Image 1 (cartoon, one colour):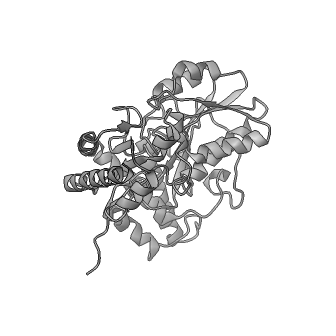
Image 2: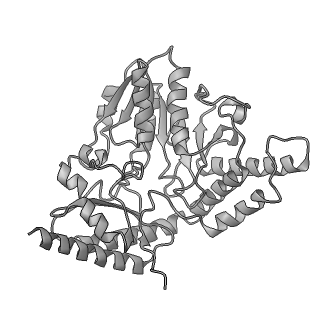
Image 3: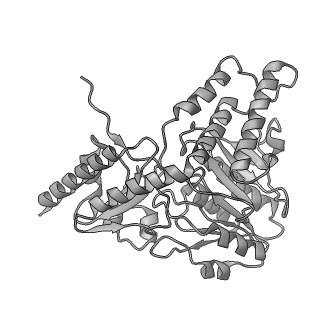
Length: 387
């Protein structure tokens, strides 16, 4: 008899495709396989119509116009296009960019690349709860600042940054505002107009959609954002991002967002209750430290550091029962402690002994109870072994 799969609690790394999303995608993998750029026959027309509808669905989700949505291969490409594209397009205006120490590598690495080209980047520190200080941001703005990039929801600790206040500050100083909303879309309300957001990176696979598809929102009015293409070829996506559009993935992306928005209030409350239940169990152990703001976080997100255990040993002891990580999926293979947790002020030992939980749509109360029991047993066993 096959062994039972571990309980999946790593929803910030990725999520399974929702059956409704898969159903929406399948026709565009078989009979409706046309290239949306082929305008001479019905196969292309069908694909183009599907892409148009998906673009409109995604735009409405963030209160944008459909022509402001540029499809990419994911949030990493969207982040690179936003940061490098703005830097190149506005190089005559200035060479200063502001971001945050706790950003995803897909933001930090493009910034470091630009530093090698002569740009200056200010990396804002965060407070112990993971939030930026708005006054510190205001003081960092300069006449040559062209872009501020601040993640909507942190991929490790789930903290929600004050987008509306950041956007208002940037608008007052006529600086473009980009946010990586890969973890936030479909989980919290996003409004590019109310939040004064000029560029927003999105992806599907954090929201029960397919991997390999994302989008970048690029404001076209008040102000009209200029963007230098980073991929050249067939002039798709109005010349901003060349490459044949993956119709089936785009359709799945839009369906995933539509489902997320439809269930957002109720699902958010359900996930919040499950998260708080898990945290309540873990708090019965001594030496549990919450990483990030207690309430200003994604509803299904929990990150804790645990005293008296070795992080790698804890993950090893849990892996047959629970699928969980110790940090960003893009850095979890590294032996180093999470830079995000170090930025919060955690020492190396505590930062290394952390667990990141991403509770999702298909998790149940029974999953949470079982996971909590397994974690407590593992921690107690490791502590006994260390004493």
